[in-house]
Each structure stands twice: as structure tokens, then as C-alpha cells.
Image 1 (tube, rainbow, N blue to C red):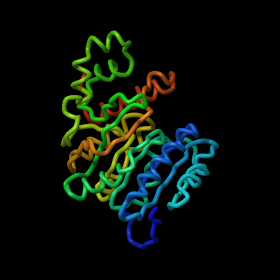
Image 2: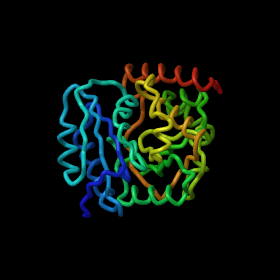
Image 3: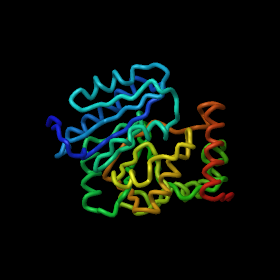
Image 4: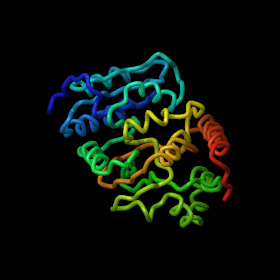
Length: 273
């Protein structure tokens, strides 16, 4: 592996990861895949910031162990301030490119190198989203059209038989036909689990809206980003993502989902069906 070099210049790549009582084995797997991807960079000038919202955990220790060859900054002790606000703490250091990364992602070894190469070849790209799979290998669709309230309720809370009745509608909402084996430009909304930004754009946008505690902060940021620069779905950048399923996490998560959805529609306009 090429050792990272020290430099007073801005980093090529900065990465922020937010944890909250994250599963240790899942976090280690994420960081191991990140280390493999970092090792392929031609310009290994990076900074990783782990922001731990947990009251007490070993996430920082795990990050330093798994990424021992790389500069790691750990921010902790501030309590659970929410997903977006926690990432915003890391944005005081933004490189030429910045990756917002969930702690439940495993990426292919060439993912970072491919993403940076694509964005350099396409300088109008402000935000890149990858091709994703669930851990069982089935496709996960990270791109979305502007959500109707019906789509959100159907996708998040409807029983399987009802989702099956509206399969064509869900497929359209998830842009399944558009996001396959070719790059696709300007999906309106992309998932916050893996957002590769051009650093200057992320600074211009001011990061996440801190009013979102959890859920929909990525919807809001995607729309604001798309109004300022192009978003690209790039299938040659591949990840596995284990998250999602707000409705299966209990009433607290459902309440947060509802509060954030109300804020999102107040900001961007309600679409019922």
C-alpha cells in the first residue's frame, strides 16, 4: 500500500462517517473495505473524520485500528445531535472531493478511484451516487424521483401484498429502468448512504440542513445540489448497503420519519399522489 503523504494543500479526498451505537463488526467491515479502496488511490492525500453520536462506544478506537495507515480524526462527546448536524461538524475540512459514507457500507476496491476519475473527466458533476446491492446480492435503488406522500407510505409501511399491487409505481419512483448499467444524469434525489461531492459544491451548499434530525436530510441536500450542479448515477462505482427499513426500527424511528417528511414537504412542496 502506498503511504499517505503529508501536505499543507487541501486533501484530495475527505470522508465523514457518522456513528450511533453502530454494530462493531459491521463498522469494522465498512472500514476494512474503505482501507482497500483508499489503497488504490494515485494521490493518497486523505482525511477521514468519524463523528460518534453515541453516549459511549468504541467507534473511534475501531476507526483508528482499522485505518491505522491513514489520518483519522474522531469527534465524540457531543451526544446524539442527529445525522446531518454530525456530518456538518466534519465539513470544516473539505477536500477536492468529499465522501459522505454510512457505517454499514462495503465498497468495491476500485470504488473511490473510479468515482474520482469520473468526476474529474466530467467537471460539471457535483454529486455522484453508486450502484448498490443489498447484502443478499439483490439490487438496491438509491436514486428516486420527487416523492409523493403515497410513494413514501407505500414503500416504507405497506404490507408486501400491497407493494406488489403497486410494483410498477414503485419501480418508477425508484428509477429502476433508468439506473442500470449505463451512467445516468440528474436523478432528482439520491441516498445519503454514499454521496461523493465535489468539495467546492458541498461548501457552497453549507452541508446538511440541521433542522433534519434523521431522515430526508439527503433528499433535501440532493435537491439543493441538483439545482447547482449535475448529479450522476455511476454504475461502475459499486457498493453493498445494509441499512434502511425505517418502519422496522420501532416507533421512535417512525416518528422521526414523519417529522422529517413534514419539514421536507413544507420546504419543497407537497405532492400527495
